[in-house]
Image (cartoon, rainbow, N blue to C red):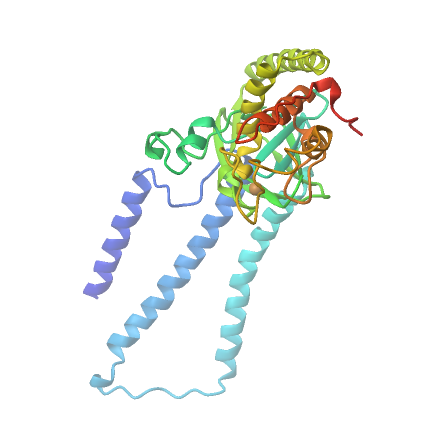
Length: 381
Ligand SMILES: [Cu+2]
């Protein structure tokens, strides 16, 4: 019996020290009702498994010690014992049933928004792009992209001067986080723009695939203000690891303030884009603006120096398109090509397209010498 006492002592120590420490190996409890229910289900199943484990291993160890051959024990023979066979069928069946019922309840809760009382306060459409997220606040006129933050992006490059270990929330930070109010019922609609991505914030208790041509949905009611981080969790191509998710949950008043700021910012940006669409820029202005646009939108595939990646992404340097007719070049950027090059008319403003086209023709090893104004772009339809 000494061995049992020892085992119990070890188990007790492990459990108590783990309970005291901020133990992070376990599933997160999260900040929504659903995440609590998922966590509770996980703990219930875990403890059932622990119980079964203790029972089975106790019997096993007891038998090894007390029924060992050296003691002269002769094995019992009980073939075709009906009682025993019924017993070892019924008991596991009941155990499985006791797991299946709560598990089904949580599954229904995940898929049925009616389990979350009250009307929807806000609907956010989430679109997965290679390799960023787009958030549209339906009915609010707010629509923006969320990219990996500049510091992480710089530190992840080969030969970067920044040490990733010194970047706060390395690869888990974005330029424009999703901001939502706490204690409000928020509905997410998910879709993909190119390939399948998956939107996952562990603290919310679920993840949803974003599939091109389909709309899936998910619901949250976040209980406490905070910053919640997640990642794309469906392998979606080369930069899959570089499209994190940051959700900031704010108290209602602060959220309203953020909303108002975003709206006025959005109006200013729209007015600016409208003015720039008909403005005549100098060549230097276009090249300077185009360089920024190129680094933010084109460099991840065509490379910062324009060399591309042989076999995957064509070079900009000495490219026949870039050195061909300027309208064709602009049309390719506007409309995209195949699966990999997205239509940038959906992402960039006319002035940005004109700038990046002009930049490509006059930099990155090209010296075509011409330029295009936003108003001269091919008709966008
Ligand atoms: Cu992805």
